Length: 428
Ligand code: SF4
Image (cartoon, rainbow, N blue to C red; front, side, top):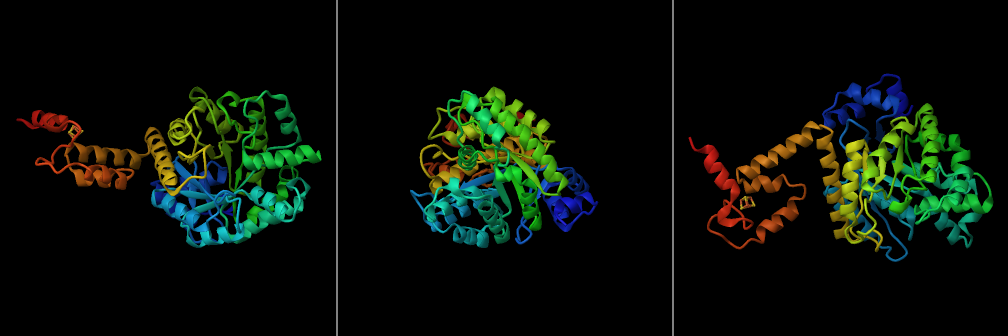
């Protein structure tokens, strides 16, 4: 039985109980949300980790992408990025490796990573084809399903698969006047395969076969949005929405087959369209958890795209998005460094936490009240320990020159507003 099937039968498993305690929710709320598909507990049956709980009213979660590329393929660096991401609070890691021994990379990650791991099997399809001296366009449905099965058997917790790209959505893509075309790597692989072979997407055509493979190890399905906008100009257009309608149908089928499912979303979206994008997804996809990639709210921020994505992510999560994929300052420029990963995770966590407050999450609100109290008390040690990135906050504080009066900082010095305010408030 999968977790969804168990939840539908009324069973409150130990996993549900533990997740509910961590989130401050009643186990019955989690069970019933899992049964109706508004929450998903993500963990491969083979792994020994705390499952990732996605979906309101649980805390908004964040994902950090790591992985090799042809420009840089050092497995040690990617493992270190995973460690840094987890250390700074990433709830999940996606391995997007496209170079080197992909199976070995997954093996190393699975050995060490304490959080849920996701992959995009279409990348491996393209790489294996290249290793065999052929084009990915010559690969077959069986080739793809073989790789998907391997990822599930190896222990991967969730797979992003672009099942909503089909002959119809590819035809629509040809019609719309996009500025940036399609920018999903996995999505464009399957789009070109469909277009050049004039055949239906095996992931769409044989969706039940896919669900059976996932159900065997209770692997969650992340329905990829291959036609997500890659520029603000293209946001919320006909092809994006048409794919989302297909994904909505597939969500229903996954739920019927008791497979945990969530839906990937944009991308690049102007700020005033972010809320509408979430509302449309929730409405079309039966309130399945929504996993947004950013979204970036401007296209002019390379070097600072983590900030652009945090603005979009906070608004998206406030409107109901459940899972934010981080963006690093290196986005659109190069493979992220370890420092880029750290900055991306913290930016995404700030977005998720800001949204948790707006969603009324009691422990998020308590955290802010605690640090505010420490600030007002000029209790520096407690304040620093409550920062979202205590290491960076401490390094700033340490950089201060030695001073006689440590009750204020170098910002306002002797004009410390807190000290002055306290002296008035406390005078009897
Ligand atoms: S000096 Fe200014 S910034 Fe520093 S603690 Fe006092 S009020 Fe806050």
